[in-house]
Image 1 (cartoon, rainbow, N blue to C red):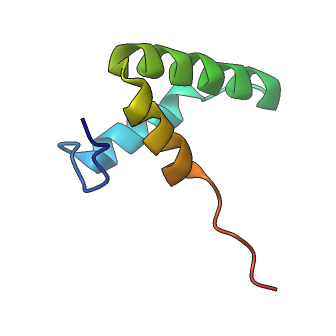
Image 2 (image 1 turned 135 degrees about the vertical axis):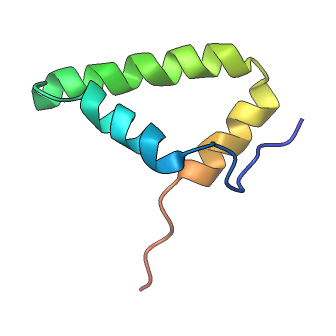
Length: 66
């Protein structure tokens, strides 16, 4: 299986709004913990280590110019 990097979520704006609302009223620490739990839940759902490794690579920040 290959990681999908093209738009694949119906109503992406609605998804983003829900994601932001999930964090409403949380402290930075609580928000970070929520993100960590969400990553683990979604990683478990995906289940494919090769796809997860592809996601790790895709999520890395770009190298700095210099």
